Amino acid sequence: MDDCLLFIVYCLSSNDEGSSMNADASRHPRSIVYAIYALAAGLLALGLAFGKRDEDAINRIPRPIRMLSSALVLACALLLRRDARCGNPRDAAMPLTAAGMGCDFLGDLVMAKVIPLPEYAIFGMAAFGAGHGLYMKAFAQRMQALALRSARARWTALGSAWAVALVSWWALVRSPAIKPALNYGALAYALLLSSMSGMGAALAAQDRRYTPLALGGALFFVSDIFLAAKLFRGTRFPQIGDVVWLTYIAGQALIVAQIGLVD
View (tube, helix red, strand yellow):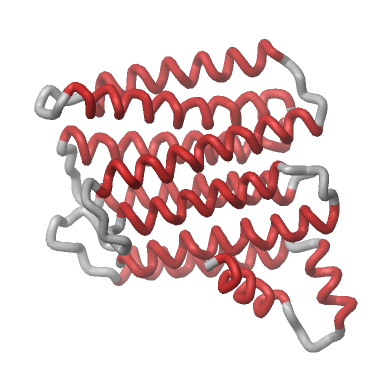
């Protein structure tokens, strides 16, 4: 899958005006990333406008389009990883981010049942949990590279994020209808996710260029809280699946772009 996506990115970035322009595109992939993001956004808009609601009335965007939009964000992450290795091989933030996006793409396939597994929610949460851990490490690497060492900013952001996670779990996710182990597993996952979001906020608090990254982490958190509410408490409203997906993929796109395109 990694090689196939890199080939797609190479085809999108190649042109007939000579290898020097290709080298420039490789060094400065901003326009390519924006073009791929525009393609993904266009596909999602078409799916939302013309797709038919599924039998549960929770999704209008067809599953193939959802998976393709995730694959396109992963393709951008792989492109930016390659660019980061060419520019500064000591900067590990983008390779970690690309690996995190790869874990999340796997989680998308599991949660969409493209990869059929028993207890798919548990396997999906495990894949996303690995992705959150890699994102947190990437944010920490970028803070280290930029010499952003404010303990106050980090712990204030993390403490606030954990508080929001605890309240959200209590009010929206916790359910007496499921086993206590699942309830506390959902709480642990919410705290892990909020830690990733909090680390993004800590990075943005010390360098305003990363404010969109912090927004991406917040959108990711909102998406997963809605998803957990649907899975564990049975929360339903029309097109909840589309709300979950759009906030999720927007959050992913912001995280990938900000780590890859901001030095």
